[in-house]
Amino acid sequence: MAKPPKDADAERFIIGEGAYTNLRTAVPYNDDKVFRIDPSPMPIVSIAVLNAIFVAFFGVFYWLGSAYGTANKTMVTLATIGIGTMTCVLFTAVTYYSFDKARRLGPWLVVNKITKKVTLPREGLEFDASEIVHLQYITTKRLDWGGVANNDRLSELNLVTCANGERTRWPLLRSIFNVKAFEYIVDPLLEYTDIPVVRVVDEWLGWNTTETQLASNHAVNRSGEIGRF
Image (cartoon, rainbow, N blue to C red; front, top):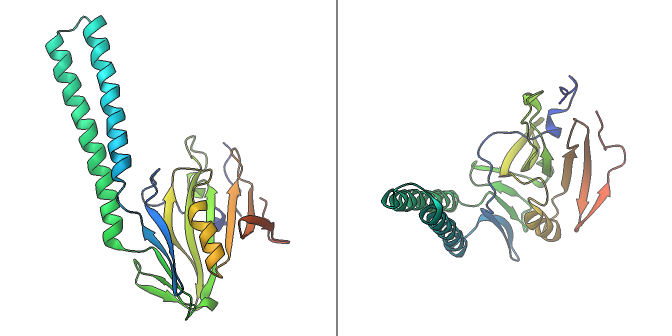
């Protein structure tokens, strides 16, 4: 992969910091007074289903090892139980920790519909409506990884503000998905708030990017603001 051009706009590429996940750790909340991006409830059913899949997988592994393997059956049994238990325990612990930590930290974003102020509770910050540039829904690569072969495309949801003349991106959510990573947050936010949302994507191979303003579940091209490198 060729390196990005030297004049590439850093805001068109993901921040690339923190942990990315395939879990939906956030959920939108809306009422007459506020719109929030809240932590998701603990996915008890999903944890149970995935653990059942792990058990079934290791059950097949045990059956194949016992029926066709040449190793001692006692060793096969102990290995299956040990590895299977460790897999289930680690998966459950990591998932529980991720959702519990998100719950304890509270909402990522709060929009007060009455005062029009936007709060980032985790940062301890509050912005007036005039200081909000947009919410950025971005799926690109890390700019500073340049020619690294495994520079995968990832998705972020970032709030872009301009306060006291300083433009800043505040990371909210991160996902390993590069298709439909945050529509479940963006669609209701567009419906229930006045915050503009821009979608930034790049090429699967290469560094060209396109920025599109989203509006009520469908995209509108921003004349003069579609960027190409």
